[in-house]
Image (tube, rainbow, N blue to C red; front, top):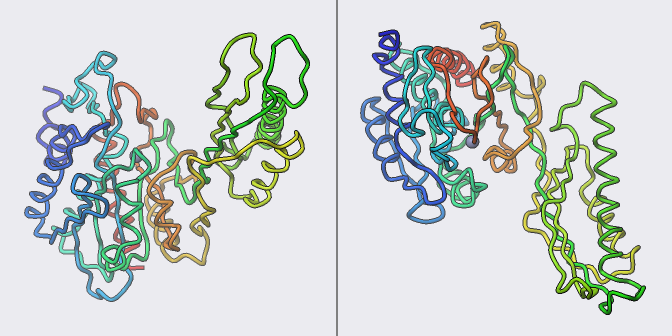
Length: 401
Ligand SMILES: [Zn+2]
């Protein structure tokens, strides 16, 4: 059997076991994940702690390998245990079966996002520990809940706790993305998510008139201004081939609602935009503009936010950050091409960066189509095992930085 060399690999076995736990939204049961991680901690002879920063349904699991100098700020290797829902009818393999095909491709939800990375962290630590290696810094391997829902019950409430502070984290690593080519993306920042609602009121009345200050006129103006801003960002991308989507601000109209009857001018309309503010945006100025546009078109518009993330400074990727230098040295030594960039979506790294801890997003999966949240999510077994080796080198360097 062509697949037997992978099936008999110890790390592939653990990985597949973890993939088979359906910790899937909308109502993930994390108890089997915690149980699995307890077994892993036992096997690896590492202490394990389980915290519940939000509620009993949402654990944070931390395995710890103490360093030679435990007073030094530690290294945190973080992953999330939850995965997004599946539509099994669109899969060619059962989404929680972790089948391996003839080419060594392992199919399951979480093979990319991000049970793979969590198990690679463990596998790398297992290999390093077996080799007799010792490091200056303590290494924590954490597994959190609820990342796919924005970390509401996971990293977000965990970071402000005394338990998190006690981990004394000096540098964190979390998820990145697969790469369809040879280069590996490395994420050092995220844009800020703002979900902006304009609740527009205006003159109501009969559909046969030309009433002043209708909600429709105001809506048109606001949408026009937002789309003008959007066009400027499309233009920036077109004019500069060095820019990627994470470098610019994205604005998308995502919801629109209102109206009572087709011949009645409604008293109110609502329009919502998903905005991802780039690092170069002056947030106060951006918000002031939103209000100015409302005033310009006659007022009567209330702005509310479903989400309004603060500006989080990026993690330095220069000589000022010894962890970056240690990371880069590892990838250079392995002749791995790294492409530093700004993440398009959001990850738990933002909560860590927000309290001033450098964090890098990195999922070592090159030559792999980007299939997170997609049907038939997979990772090839050799790519996975290569990722374990990459992590070994990186962890060795950052834990001694
Ligand atoms: Zn993820």
